[in-house]
Structures are given as C-alpha cells and as structure tokens.
Amino acid sequence: MPELSYANIDRISNDIRKEEINFSHLLDELIDHVCCDVESEMQKGMNFNEAYQSVKQRMGSRRLKEIQKETLYAVDTKYRYMKNLMKISGVAGTVLFGISALFKIQHWPMASVMMTFGALFLVCAFLPSALVVLWKETHNTKRIVLFISAFLTGALFVAGTLFKTNHWPFAGTLLTLATFIAVVFFMPSLLVNRMNDQETKSKRAAYIFGATGSMLFIAGLLFKIQHWPLATVFMFLGVVLLVIIALPYYTWLTWKSENHISSVFIFMIVGTLLIIMPGALVNLNLQHSYQEFFYPNNIRQNEMYNYLYRNNSSFMTRYHDSLNIKQMEPLHSKTVALLTTISNIQERMVQQSEGKPGNPAISAEQIKKTETGSEISYRNLSFIMDPAPVNDFLMPQCKARQELNSSIADYLNFLAGIVPADDLTKYKRALDTETYLTFGNGAVLTSLVTGLHSLQIMKNGVLTVEFSVLNGIAKHK
Image 1 (cartoon, helix red, strand yellow):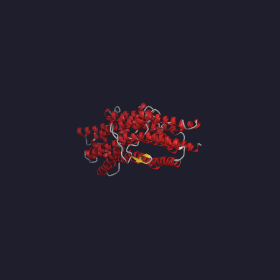
Image 2 (cartoon, one colour):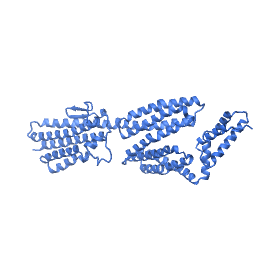
Image 3 (cartoon, rainbow, N blue to C red):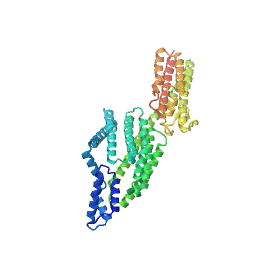
Image 4 (cartoon, helix red, strand yellow):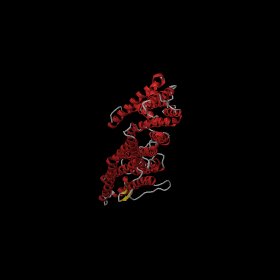
C-alpha cells in the first residue's frame, strides 16, 4: 500500500489547520482521516497531487468546517444555544424589519413598533450570538478586529436606520459611526484577511479595487443621507472602482480559473447589488422629492410673493390722489424695510453656504435682483442641505434672529397706531416668528433650504398683512 511522505503529511496538516479546525482532538482525527483517504486513492495508481486533489473535490471546500460545527453542536451546550438563538433572532429581526419597512412606506399603523422590535432582535440577540458563534468556530485572534468591527458596524447601522426612519435624535451620529467603523476597520480587516489567503493570490488586485470602491460608495451614501458635500463624488468613484473595474476583473479571473460558477461568485454579485441598490434608491427618492414636490412648491411661493407685492403696489397707485395716501405711504415704507431685512438674512445665509469660512460668496444666478426684491433660484444652490446657516442665523439665540424679531416688533408698534386693537391681535399672530421658524433649540439639524423657504413664506405673510391694513385704511372715511 502506498504511504505518504512526511512532506505530504505536513502539507495536508497545514491545509487543514488553515480551515481553523480548533476543537479538542478533532484536528488530529481529520488529518488522519484525510491521509487515509489520500493513500486509498493512491492505490488506484494516482500520484499524491492527483489523489489529494480528488479527495478535496469529494469533500468540498467547506466540509471540514461543517464537521467541526456538527461536533460543536453535539457536545457544546453553549454553542448549541447561541447557534439556535442566532438563527431564531436573525429570522425574526429581519422579518419584522422588512414588514415594518413596508408598513412605513404605506403609512400603516404599528410600523415604528415592529421596526423597533426588529432592531432589538438584531442588535441585542442576533449580532452578539453571531459573534460568539464565529469565535467558537475559529478562535482566530487575527480576525478579532474583523469580528468586532463587523458587529459594531451592523449594530450601529441598524440602530441608525431605526432612529433615522423614526426621526429620533442622534440618527446621524449613529450612521456616521457605523460608516466610520466600516470604512476604517471592517473593510480593511476583510481585505487583509482575503489578501492573506494564498488560494486567492491571483485575485488580490480585484479585492483591492472592490474594497476601495465599497468604502468610497458607503462613505458617499452616508454623505448623501446626511446631505453633506462631496457625496456625489464619493459615490461616483465608488461605482467606477466597484462595478466598472473590480467586478468585471473578478469575473474574468473566475472564468479563467474555474469551469463553473461557484457560490462565492454568486455572493459577490449579490453583495455588489446590496451595496449599490440602497444608494440608487436614496438618490432616486431625493431627486423625485426635489423635482416633483420641492422645486415646484418654491416656484409657487415666489410667484405668490411677486403677485402680492405687485398687487399692493397697484393698490397704492389707485389711491395715490386719496387723502388716505398719507397713512398708506409710511405703511408701505415700513413693509419694504421689513421685507428687506428678511431678504438680507436670506442672502447672508446663501453667502455663508456657498462660500468658505471667512469668505462668503454668492452669484447672480443664485439670487437675482428683481423689481420686487431678491429672488432665490434654489436649483442653482450648491449646498441646499447645509444646516450651518440656519444654526447661525435663525435660531432664537442668534443675532440675525434677534434683529428680525426687533424689526417685526417695530412694524407691529407702527400698526398699533393705525389699526383697531382686535385687528392688531390678529396681525401679531400672523407675524409671529415662532409661526414660521419652528426650529426649536437646534437639537435636530435644519437644512438651508428649509430655512430659506420658511423666510419666503414669512415675506408672503408680511405682504398679506400689509394688504389687509391698506384695505382697511382705504375704506376708512
């Protein structure tokens, strides 16, 4: 009977150790079993390489790990409990999260409750049990960073998604931490793990391109969700590296070395889609919201402002020869001054957003000067989701907000001298800044475009009040 040399036995032993077989005496038993199978094949006239290759093909790439898992499940009570918990909580959490997403889209009740329970199952049961199971199966200290970073990325991402969907505070912080850990720790650790695998040496370049593309795309997706600048640049570079370079190159290497499509290749395709599709859906949703709802609404607000302004000016012209014009003209001057104050705040907000720290900038395409005043072209703004201008100009403690409150108070004091007390109470409610600038204390970040839109509505409110007062003066005998 042919016998294996010490070199042959060492090769088999090293290969089996790479499979991370660590359970008590199982390693020695598997080495002995494989050696016996190889010797049996060599009896058929094969050399060692042919016999060893035949045995590996018959066992499959994951059979040794499956044997260890089956052994652990049979003899290790803690492993068996964690394995069952991982399966049950993983399925339950995913099902609840998926169904709640449907309920959320359809605006059905109980969506938030199901999503919260789904997130709890995933974060508090599935991910910890999966971490314990992976450690039990490998005991590989070289992968400890990979395991922990994967756990933290998953937990923070699920929690961040839950908080973002329900509009709770700190959602952006959780998603930012998840992305940071994924980009700085998880993806590099996964790449290093693949690079150390000698069997995938020929595919290292594809892994590098794929990991770099994934990190850029994930970072870009976070920037898009948080409405930060450079989101499109990161996502574009990520797609180029991942879809145009890494995936075709990996496919070519796979077809070159294999005669059939392996499960690894299928997971690569599915994994790529799981990375790309959320970004595409986020972009489509934002684009649809802007094109179908936001921009048309702002155009109508500008049209309303122009109509009200011209209507009030026309009203003044009709009563130019009236004795009441002496009351109308001061009122109109006060109104124009208040509108100018609001417009100046809008311009300063845009300047801050478009410029650099200490160097504000603005272009004629973004804010045009018209006969009715300043008109903002929202489509030409570069950073419409920038929250800094609202924090710096419209929060209650800001100097610009205090100046605005002072201008409105002065306007109301003027009205107090020409309108009845009952009407003045009505106008105070209509001009109250809290009605338009409902931004609280800044706990939830508010975008530039929201602040500009609120100020535009306020300007329309001022013109409406002016027309009401002008009409009252004209009817007064």
